[in-house]
Length: 508
Image (tube, rainbow, N blue to C red; front, side, top):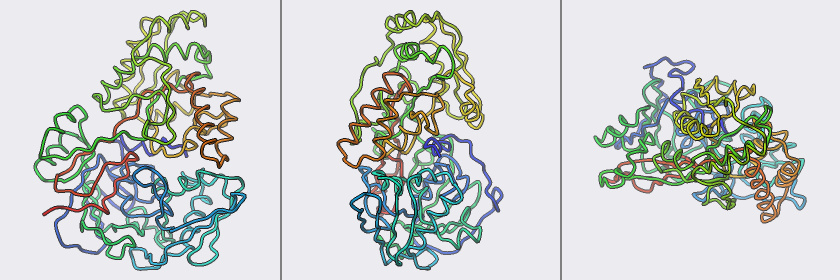
């Protein structure tokens, strides 16, 4: 799986019906809760609620509160204990031993044991599910007793913890819940909330898990409503119909921050948006032509147009707040047409037509494409903008039917999560067909290097070459923007977009 997948559902193009449900049909899973209901509005309906199979961000907004992983990212995106309390590695870094909590039950009251971890991971591997690539160096997963899991590797894997806990796609699931066929609509996890009602096309209700190993949540009932229009979500928040949403009009962030009736959370995300030129085609296989495009683009104009200035400009993938950040500012933020024209002249390229692949499901790609068309016109390049739906966009990308495309990549914690897939010669998401032996060597080394400083240097060197040669033309890190009622306490917007309500409370 490539890590672009969770971004699919940030567009409002998800099905309004799930297996076994039709729009407006309720699935009551039992359970009740007293106290006020906390209503959160998300931008669309989950496609399903099986964490191993869904690729929908809308799904994970719900599942973040239903399931647990072995470890999980803290607010600085460093891995901390979750279902595992501790772990150790062998001297050769090939054996990891995890010690599990002994006070955990699933939400139906059944015991959680090491066998559930083994089952969950083997399910992903054996069925070759979307996150199977995270186990590429795993030789075996075994349980030596009910509270001990041993993972044996074929090579040192310094990012194993982030692979296992970076997001809820690696959740520990219950075998019976899977085999009964209920997990897609009635999931049973070990998390702080349990799903008690699903009315397709309208809402999902969660109630607090009183037996949660981390302590019962303070908010007793959460209802997720599906609202795709920012203006509608904002009006619902102001009227008190909802208490939280991430469906926020970015052009209104400044005015919202001045509104005392609303709390606003804006934080740079670990995501990034980029452009890629198809190097399997001339003239884009010429590094000077790609660099010319990178110099000609007005990044400042793109950021203002697509995010109203809320995004953070960045010419590499990793945001400044990350421990993996590398400083790089080779290209200008506004267009440098003189340098662009000089590079094109050196390449012997006099102009032509560029097929730009955007998608109507992500309006920011269309907006950016329109700005790029204007930027490249003085170079004698006419940009033909195509706007298929995202499913068709993926087909076109995977078949190489494009000159340039724009897209984003979400959920970035460890550099191996994205650099290898996108820029290694054999990378699974190297749609632009980039190949550089030096970059390959750095990325191969980074995958197994256990010395943190050396590993960071490997990725820094690779990142600079990738940007220098315009394998990707990086644009910005979008902001995480959320708004909520001032009555919601103990909640913060996170850089990884994980929506966690377990530590939050509602003031009277």
